[in-house]
Length: 84
Image (cartoon, rainbow, N blue to C red):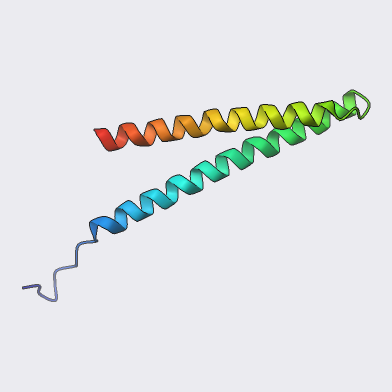
């Protein structure tokens, strides 16, 4: 029987839900940040290359690839934490 002095334990599933939400948020923010960074890098390169448009294309592709690598790193880290 629970007394008024004892706090309730948080549900185990609540912790899993919060962990899943944080993982999804980290993945989305990571991918968006790298893609935007690639876009701005490409726009800067376009100014240097006289607005050819190639800089933005290369920047976005590079940003997406770096974002995917970051997502893989995040997922590996979370999977290793859950194993041990």
